[in-house]
Image 1 (cartoon, rainbow, N blue to C red):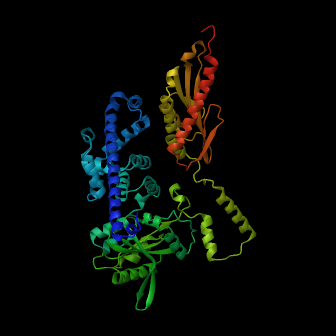
Image 2 (image 1 turned 90 degrees about the vertical axis):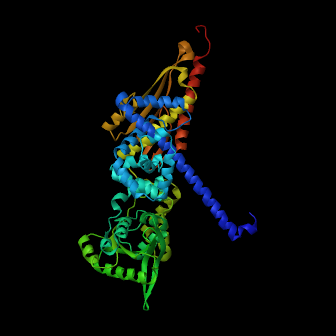
Length: 557
């Protein structure tokens, strides 16, 4: 780009419009592809539902095998994914009325309108079992989001709540997981408030829904006895995560926002503007339990913002007090007679952090460095040793242990590592026609000391023992055809061992090579490909050794 264009204001604005249109087009294309895929999955799920009574459960395994033969390059037709399609169809078709109520909440949402248009263009068979509005709701989020929601959430009202929030906010998978883990469904709209008495009905309902209780500040590593100023400063340092917790529509205006009343200065802790409510929202932070005088002070702040900051077209300012709320009756009595709309919400700090936020969070060492820069304190010998330990931890680069072994984590390893790795192995073995070289082959599965040749029996064993110490997959090829009387057998095996804070994948029949992962580690597709490639490569080495030993011509052949 020439220097003239680089500084040309009109060109920069025009370039911004072009970029915006490209991004918008990419988003619409991605949405349409997703809806085509989900339309297909809906059709397959409905077809499986109809045939289950006639053919039982086992036909799904045959279907998965036949589809793999017919469409070898297409992913998503494994037995497990086909069963997920049926489960997905069964759930949503059984809760049609609740879903329709959810659609009503999204009546004017742009994403829903786009989705309705896309559903109308789906193939006729995909539309037969789905209403256009209903389809627009469930076809608007990715398949992975659906699977996660149905895995973690049981109540249909809660399922559609998270689908709606994902559509409205454009949540990524990681953000959706965070919101479900923090129990957003049971926190939203639970603030103690006088909104019903101080705001018009529609505004009161929206304000009540907007304010949560409690607010979840997992992203802060603060002690319970933190000072209010440090609390505020920590929230501002993590403003992106704070806005995410506040929810859609909040825009940050400032902290320690100055109000001057007849020569007296007052400072608001945090001031936001909410575009959905069309009003300013004040957040006052208090460490400790609620006290009645807090409400009076916040009421004065609300009235002052209305007088000095609010524009005529803005709705009435709302005040929210963040503090501990053990005595709800005292809070209700304190805000009942106040004319300004006030809400009171609790908050919580936790030490556990979602993996996706870890990179953005300051470590304990970084927080201590910031505090040390502000307050110079002479360190004791014990503190010096602690600092030395922290320095070693920081330089090690080791991934932090967050989650110990438990039945849920074992189940996730089975669904996200064990089964996908088997599918990868079968895919790579099929690519090289290894099956064709042998008379037959068999598979077996083991849970601790119990084994079976069928996958459904493997799952039954897991139901009886949901905390195994080891699981195993064995693929055994019998009778190498071309070796004649010297026909030989080969096979591969891998085990997953579960210990207290990690799981280990043992990669060969002698259990000599292994890969270790923490339970919080989300294994990537590339890692699974690498593991499968390594095992099939070792299998081919074993076959070659046997072939070189047994395929040499002799007088008996």
